[in-house]
Length: 354
Ligand SMILES: NC(=O)c1ccc[n+]([C@@H]2O[C@H](COP(=O)([O-])OP(=O)(O)OC[C@H]3O[C@@H](n4cnc5c(N)ncnc54)[C@H](O)[C@@H]3O)[C@@H](O)[C@H]2O)c1
Image (cartoon, rainbow, N blue to C red):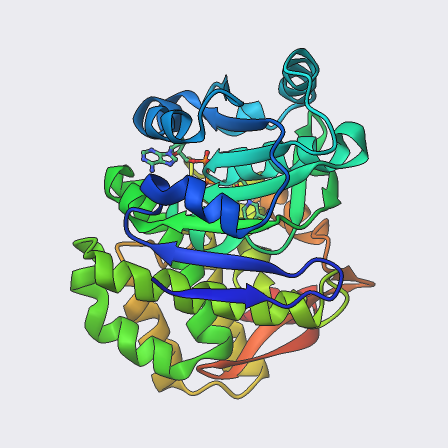
């Protein structure tokens, strides 16, 4: 079972990745040396229905379950208030533990509840989607949405442990599984050319969800995320390279009328656009750009902007990107596969090439 430590000075914690870890959850929590006067598992109905019972059985009488509806709508003030009420009813104290069992929605929501209840109680991330296992469970970002925008209320709050059971990935719907691969490919593109080589040959086994291949995928991705986060916890510099593909991706998600892209699908298209910009403005070779687009396509992800994408709504979403810098955007580009850099591009230069 691969394990490693995220060496954040104020909040170091272990990451465990392997098949069947939920069956050893009690042991893993003990290894994290947490006081566990009470343990609350926060999950959604879909994940809870499949994975909560054996956990509750292992953790015994001092463990409880709080379940919310699945989906992005649960990252709301109303659901957060519901969690606080349940925490109060269950008499959580500063020696209690919140386990976030689920995808990125549960990780962000339960993480923010743990960050703020009693000014912070211990949090363990138990991610069950590929996206959460390779990305959102590590890094300490927690948040809920407001009607006026996504992730507007949140906190940096590090978990005390991350326990990623690869076996949970077998029950993911196909489209949800594949969208997680966009973030995996991203790590290769920005930091690890040999990982891209490996993904090119391993893609059939990954798509078949072979547990050994998935363990490698999750471990290698999380090690990259851990490196970036430990060197820039609050996103003031290096961490920005994780936004590769996200500028066009976010605009596609925000502007309506393009069909409903999943986040990873929008990022996949965004990476292809960013590599086109990289060819013109950062010296990326045509060969490297072609390889990246080919790999994204082989993961079953889209690579083309939708027809007629230059709508007012899309351009306005792009102009309001949070990476905006004066008349342009701070873009993450590649000068070669496996190496990213930041470059400010004005809108004319972006639209001339995208
Ligand atoms: N904190 C961060 O750094 C960070 C980074 C990226 C994304 N996010 C957030 O993550 C969220 C998206 O996360 P997500 O894509 O995991 O979505 P999600 O949590 O909504 O999960 C997707 C769906 O899969 C189901 N599911 C989860 N695990 C399952 C399993 N093992 N088997 C069967 N079904 C399962 C869920 O019930 C849900 O319906 C967004 O809110 C986004 O803002 C946060």
